[in-house]
Image (cartoon, rainbow, N blue to C red; front, side, top):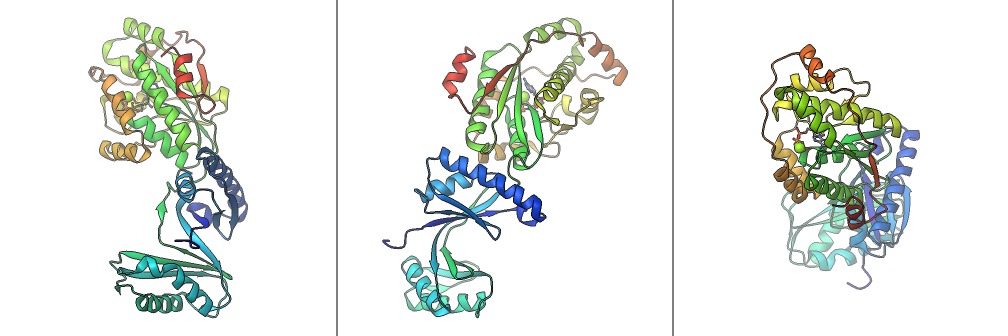
Length: 395
Ligand code: ATP
Ligand code: MG
């Protein structure tokens, strides 16, 4: 439709809008930084402008690309490709909107939704009624407010109006970097992946630590998932991955620790190691993908034994989630196929649940507490391709 191509993308943000002025300015700054990076990753040029609680991407070189990029940015509630017009009065507005929508509503059941910001001689209801009847005259089938096939949206801001018909959901939440840095114990399975994504959605910068227990395939999958998250979901933040050679630790635990305690002791060794690493890299909390009751090592009692006495907070963003919810979320994030592979390779035999309490656990843990762990390998996930990373790890 020549002359009516969308010329701007409206980006709505969620919770940032309800913050105090200073916090809001800071968060808007982070959001814009992340949006710039997302646009550039998708090869889209455009001018970003923030005003009155909205972000506008003007004249994007690709409208679809701009929508796709912005709906991968945390803090973004939704995005709409729009056609912006400057109008003089309501008659002018209705005439221009009719021109824009007439072809699009032809023969369809429709409704008009108008919103207004600023001082005008007319209300949004006026816009809905007037434009609605004009579009009926222009060939739309009929109006149905509940079950419309097509919605003509008109958003009026001062002397300008934005016309659009599509709202694409973003992830919501807060822009990455508005909250503190978290080190996630990252296996590459469904749970730690979704936990990572949820923390980023709440504004946390994340780094990932993976413990290599001696099988190349799980490490490979973990790196692939981590790379996917870094490329597709971490605009505005540089995610690093740390790979820790835990093969020696695993051997020693299997040799010295009584079988029912081995999994829990391994987990505690991972947490303690991660705590030291977190302090070194400036992370303020740790996180895991544990979900209450999912396995014997994830009961409240096990969580108490594993995590008791840590200095840093250990976040468990999935503690109240069911597995099927988590798997569905992985599908939305786009990591499902990778995660599924990880579950297949991770199918370790379940060990019996230990009966003892804190003292008995500590007795087992103390047998291996001094085990020496090699320095982690640090990978800057964004600056290298997946192949380069895998090659450097000899995977
Ligand atoms: P996931 O889906 O994240 O693998 P899971 O349900 O398989 O979780 P477990 O294997 O019991 O659960 O692990 C519990 C948590 O411990 C994981 O979510 C993750 O945070 C951490 N974890 C387990 N194995 C590793 C590993 N090799 N490296 C890093 N973290 C790990
Ligand atoms: Mg696992």
